[in-house]
Length: 79
Image (cartoon, rainbow, N blue to C red):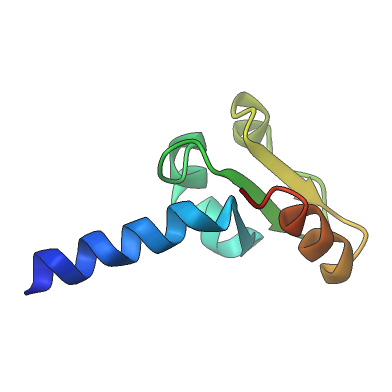
């Protein structure tokens, strides 16, 4: 049952087309290694520019001009 629930959760995550997260979360997870499940782009809402580690990940985009902008950019990536 748990495995089926986990697979369903991952399927739903992949359907979103993008991930929107805060900087504390992504920095604690090292930006999920730059790839959050099946090549999903990661948009990071932050008040500051990314640390150098984030620049190594092409799928990670820091958005510093507000949460609405971050949400709109992530929405634009829907599959």
